[in-house]
Amino acid sequence: MTVEPDLVNESQINREKEKARHLRKSQWWRNRIHKGICHYCGAEVGRDRLTMDHVVPLSRGGKSRKGNVVPCCKECNSRKRTMLPIEWEEYLVSLSDRVGDE
Image (cartoon, rainbow, N blue to C red; front, side):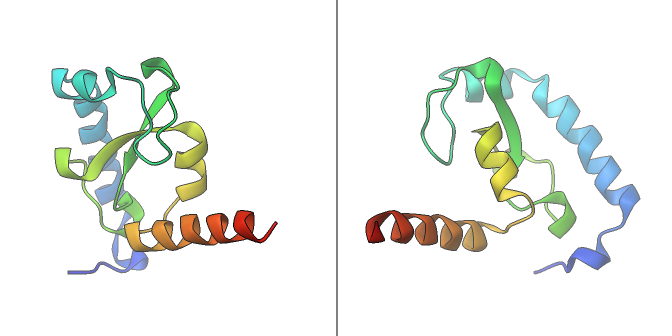
């Protein structure tokens, strides 16, 4: 089921952000960030420099659940913004295509 961005209201997003705060305090999350590696680019940035990214963004109907959050570096999190996984994948492919053209 796809949720359009305008169908997700602010109170739903705020509830999910609160759930994310609790999840970040959990042993499960500490285990996830232990190696300090970004889920997307594979860079070793250290666990203190990882952020929690919602694979399906909250604004697109994503939830703060273990299956929807991954540790990632600030750079990847900022670039991904509100993209869905398929959109992010296409973005990464377009970047690699540009590098190959140089």
